[in-house]
Image (cartoon, rainbow, N blue to C red; front, side, top):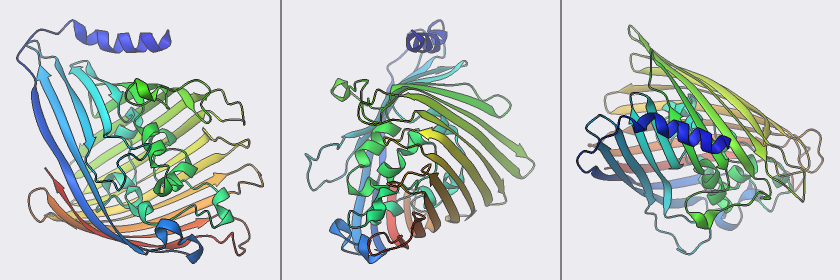
Length: 401
């Protein structure tokens, strides 16, 4: 009942103002990105796909935007993000030909989005990755070039939270750490699961957003239906973001508070946490300079194991933009406390990322980025439990169209 009530209430406030008008317009855009990445990490983690230190990668996407407006001023449309990447195996399980797809309606009452897309908290959050350059600094592509959870190292029992943001947007920490070795589809499924979101108009610089996700395991069509006994699954997820933007003479200020909570699905093999997390961030802009950071924590974040885990992280950074040139330095530290479980030690992750880019032509932006990361499972190092640390260097060019 509460799911139906939220949906019908959010959509109903727009119905009275609708009236027929001309057909909506369709706009096609997207981006194409090519990069070369080179990584240096502990030798025990240099196995399988990471036995080579240098790799090339492409990331291409087609965006389709549909927009219309009724005679009475009701806006409506859709946004579709189609993956256009070239895969070595087009039949690989978990590959989706669309990353996001949702419809929206908006008026003076605000905006409603429904479909497979990110949540309101992630859209309104503020952290150091919000203004990072190149691939995104601490929220960028560094993790794709290193193996943070090698099967050759017993230390892979530890989970590492390696990207800023709340768990619904980032995914479970172990899955994110293994994102480069096969769990990337799980990460994306949780970030862009089917949901309905409502955003208020921005009034006096303040905007509120609320999202409801019935089941984080469901994304896209009915072929992705998920039951209520999904191991590690989270259902009935509420996500809230409150954002403020203000300008005081030459000083720009942006701040945000986000929170989310949800219930654990039935788990017949192990105890499973629900979801309870929050974050706060602040950003200041002056004369081309940007300073900012954030703090986040989770008492519960959907661990599939029989032990409890608590998460905390913070970010900090600075950026400078002058004409077509921009550069940034961003840092993230995260800690996961395993509550004393022997098979999953406490863990800590650090990443310092420096990036720069240059707008060479309209839409064409070459970039360079170097990240210095370190993992620590807080256990004594042995031949198979050595901590990982290293450097990731990425150079590339992105074309937005």
